[in-house]
Image (tube, rainbow, N blue to C red; front, side, top):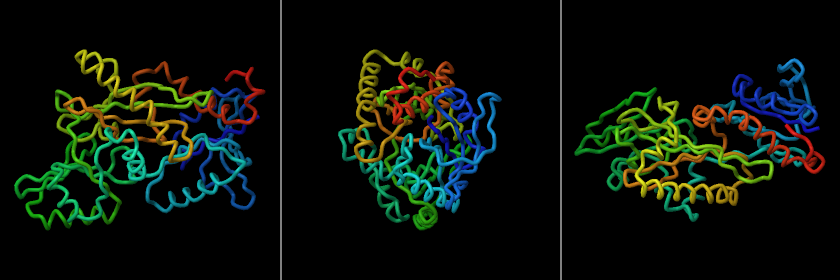
Length: 361
């Protein structure tokens, strides 16, 4: 029997997803639990959480030993609770008797350092660490406009576009689907604002890339990859995320919408389509291996790829705890596949794999 634990910071988050996974699990092979890292008793090493009751199709409050395989869906910010959870998860990962389905990737700067030195370097936007207002303004002489991204960030939160025109600095951000702008008429004012920003969070800076469609809506390609029962990477689906007109971000949390990749593909002329599909295949065939050569084993990846006006492809973000909304809204028929995927890979990791060959989920 495989004890399979699904972990999130709070029992309120990922509830539906975890429930659907538990429903797909064969109760003859899996016992499914859900818990948060803060509910592990440090002395007894027992966990207070919930166990899935197949017969009654519901979660039951339960105390149980640490599961042997853990699916980590914890998202961390800079708050004290996150730091505590992170130290507990680090302790769990150091244990030899527990396997994590996949390990989270580190921050965006650490990922940039690896990808920019790999064969994928031509697809990675130039990036520097932005530590203070003065250095950002100096760099703006080379990259104008530029983008500021938090080193520890997700969902498009905290991303700013900085533009210098004459002596006027414009700093803009996408907030709930509308563009918000701050205008400064002096370098010192701008520098002070940027200093305050960098004192709260670590930032990195990139040249602003024109990644918009013919209607001037920012868009990118979201790709979901997961490992299968044979420990091979599988492309689960592709979709287009499109932001609002004249906006900066395509993220759904910033008011973006989901469009079908097939429709996007159909809108391209023959040469552009052939080129983009070839480049996409090239990136996706190499990227997981490059990451796994530098970081611990992964189970899934959400990859965001921008396409500039000149049809160049850019890897904008790689996420080891991706959402499924883009893929499932275009391909609702894939939901069951995505619910089964963590269980299939848990079987691949399990020592009992040879004797389980005859079983089906």
